[in-house]
Image 1 (cartoon, rainbow, N blue to C red):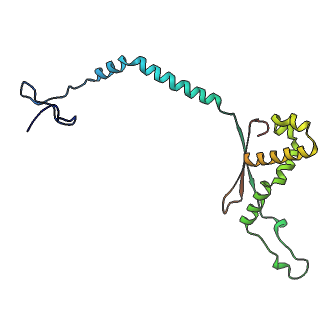
Image 2 (cartoon, helix red, strand yellow):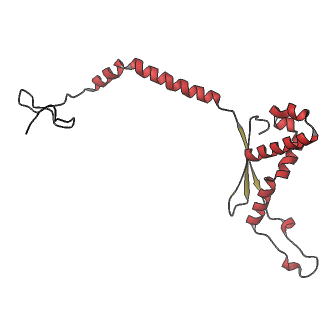
Amino acid sequence: MSTSAWISVPHDSPPPMAGGGAGVRARYAPSDFVTLLWRERILMLVVFLVIAAIGVGFAMTLKKSYEAQSSLFVRLGQEYVYEPRAGDAGRGAVPTNDEVIQSEAEILGSGELRERVIRKIGFGNIFPNAAAKYAVATPEEKRKLIAEGRDSIGKSLKIETAPDNSIIRLGYQHQSPEMA
């Protein structure tokens, strides 16, 4: 068997030493690690500063957004019970709690309600970036801007329900804390 350098691979055992003992790895003391790290302190500092600068730059470019959250408790009341005018009054149709919750959630998320909110609060208050454009717009352009605003509110509005639960959770995000 040949021990030529041409056929040895990195995972082979080290060549025998002159003293006849097997190749023994040098052991490092804990102080050696401190010395090795201290020797590369400039490189570690540069890498740290680059990563920190990238993180700060990314954090500064993020848009600020404020979120308002609310919960509504919906109870099944007399207004949800169908009472026929003629016939047996005991045969009124009573919806289940889940049906009422889903109906109320659909009403809260409807486009008509969002449009009424825009008209009540004011387009310029909700969308200050487009207020000047809205002020000089024709009635047809105003309707189009309100429709775009309605869709924008729909994207920012989050409505959540859970089965067998009488709570509807609402969340709304906006750039202005007052509008949120």
